Length: 224
Ligand SMILES: C[S@@+](CC[C@H](N)C(=O)[O-])C[C@H]1O[C@@H](n2cnc3c(N)ncnc32)[C@H](O)[C@@H]1O
Image (tube, rainbow, N blue to C red; front, side, top):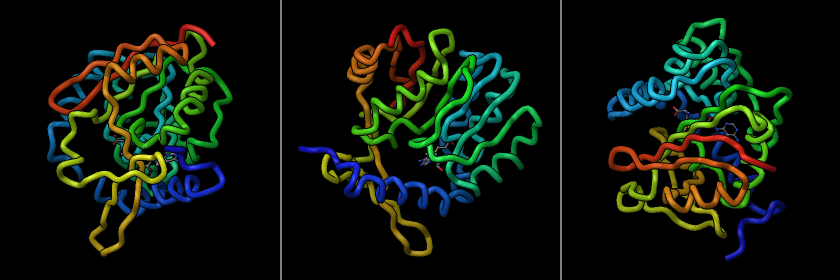
């Protein structure tokens, strides 16, 4: 099946995804019930991201506050102004620089020692996967490292919420308490397939499952 074309609904879908997270930012910030806090701290301590770190789709700061325990500085990018405000208030550290931007349009103007993104890759549509990783490559060159965390294909999402296909882009519907409903992208990767795909794009990434439904990827770019 063809992917959503650039001229049809894809831009609208991505705008709806931003609108959803903007509307949900305060509830997302309060999310503290799962085992994620423990996973976050352990993973970041394992990797110890050093130097100047770029955090993509930083959200309300769940990861930012862990990253800053090791990094010298963080550039934290997100499209939601509310998420950035909450992140700033939560992390309260002058070494974190906030950038409000759409990651499908944003371009780095320097290299970083490390790029991190948590629970973001699953929101990148298949048709934007290659260009997203090209952008990430422009952030680390051949010297920096990349790490990401997300849900993987063992997720219970399909059983609980049900995904649907919008012209080749897997999506879920997310309701808010006010009765509004948003469609957002949700790609659940298989670790081996993701590792192979990234290798084809010139990345040497180790992608492994952790816990019952998460994956973690880490590595570097090996060529262009
Ligand atoms: C699932 S949340 C993850 C937030 C954070 N990384 C975490 O794990 O807590 C996805 C984040 O992506 C952001 N986002 C969605 N679309 C975006 C876009 N086009 N450009 C930049 N950020 C975007 C949302 O505002 C939200 O903060």
